Length: 61
Ligand code: FES
Image (spheres, rainbow, N blue to C red):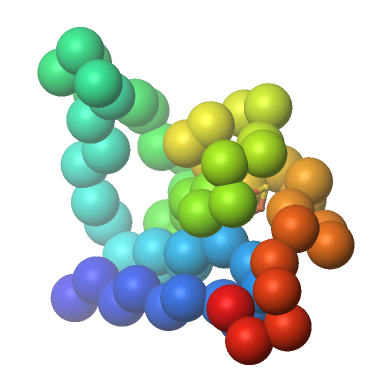
């Protein structure tokens, strides 16, 4: 089972075994069973969250 959580003022956490595909169809190899996907657009390691989101979100996002 895959569980997806949207963190308040943070990334989208994906728990479970998934296959992640890049924009050109290439598989992005995942080394962990929990990944954090950026939803602020500021990460330098997209599609993953690198913590840059701090202060990017409005209080209710
Ligand atoms: S959500 Fe963390 S860097 Fe974008």
